[in-house]
Length: 120
Image (cartoon, rainbow, N blue to C red; front, side, top):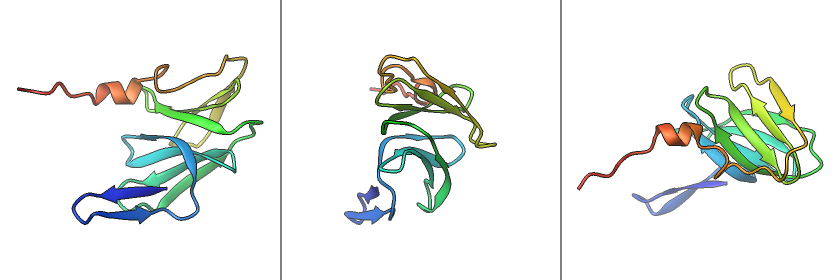
């Protein structure tokens, strides 16, 4: 996992974190679904220091992350499950029986509140 700095034309690495799906939360963390250890990792957007990691029991790797209008972090796997995580308490609920859930088109909460209408 890395962040590109266009001013210095360099990459800042976050060692030890590999993931699929990432979304910024208003709490100042980027939340990333991780693999090969299935879970979700918080990364400070300013310092790139690791925040909380929540391991999740899933038979499949994580696929997507989204933030809803209420600030919950949602994570889906590549089979049939979604997790709703409270970023304050790190407690979560799991929802199963879904049909290949996805976040980029299925969930737009926090992203939708930050959309800007270009002027000009």
